[in-house]
Image (cartoon, rainbow, N blue to C red; front, side, top):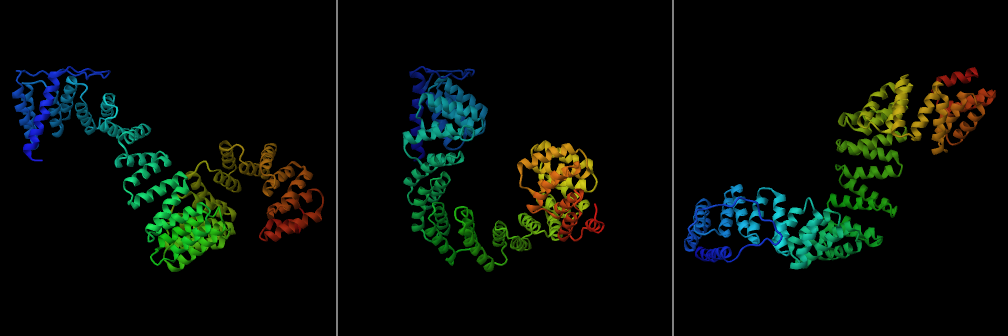
Length: 574
């Protein structure tokens, strides 16, 4: 459009502005007019002069000279008090960043014609630009009272409500679709907000409508399939993904997603076939192959055979990519789940040698070594791990456990105290550190920690058992110890350690028959050398020396380094 044509259009607009103020008096129809001071201009009624200055202002605006435009509009006001002129001044002030004056002019325009939507849009735009969101919302709401289907008000209001009132936002966006038909931007907002609110089905429906607008949009179809998966509508996702795989067979990630959906639907045969196609594809990189294995692991709860398939894939990847740690990581996890501590240790060891910054692998090493009872190695590896991750709870806890299991309790204190500082309410740490304190003679600290554990978890059977055992060992508060041991046994009646504890308390109380009853059960359920030794002690108190020596010897076979036990056997007495 030529500049001359723009001026002609502006002229017709200006005539309508002047006509508005001279032909009618505004009514609010329930809308409160702005409480602003009426602006007074010295006026000489001359509509022709007003139009002349208004057009001159429009010309200046076209040139980008808003300051001169404002002067012309102000001159126009001297000849005609038109709301349209105030609105034009407001827009010009907005352009040059004088927002307070812009607001004043817009409010004056609305005062003169409160039902004019254009003037309210001007004021709302200024509020949006100055981040006065609540005031902008107020103006758009007033516009909807005038025209409940005003597109701009509906869209802008919906946009402003997105963060604080997302449900209201969706209501307004859906109103646009209902009254104006499917529209890309609106549907996009509905899809995004619905997804954010966890309304995945509604999000997918909006995306489906977008596909109708742009049927060839491949990425949009992929997004729709993903959204249906989130919605739990796996059948619909399968339908879309099957089409995508046919449309673009080279998209291995779409193939993988299709196979994952088939696994969810328990269509094992076709799923495995597609996964094998991906692995065999020459263009498939290590990332997609790793994802294939990971997908199988995620579905292993439905079919344990997937674990073996995944393991085979990860082994091939580790052979083809010897310097990539990720396949070894998954192999370590698989071995750990299979209770194969030796393989788990070897795989996690490869991980840390290739990528020492993977703290989970250090943890895996520690757990595997602990399960194998290789406490010297556990201490060595955990010290290396803590050098890199000094504030890791699990590494410090495992180090403390290693020292404790080797009766190096003085050395166990530091890592266990560190672990406790990292997780002050962890019952396992509290219990272990309490035992360590007791072992090195810090009985007050030990009891204090046990009491803390019981405050955190009053019925925790581990704390109840360990606290009662330490009291029994010291011969203190035996009635309290018995009460706690009974509570622990109620929860874990088959636990040999707990059976030994209550038996040992009865031993300390002098009730040797009850002691024999419980400790005998503990031995039958696979008790430790200490438990077997305890049974020998019970038989000694019952006067059966031969049985006592028999069980002491059995205990010594399991723990040949126990010098005190050797003395018992040699002397034939406790």
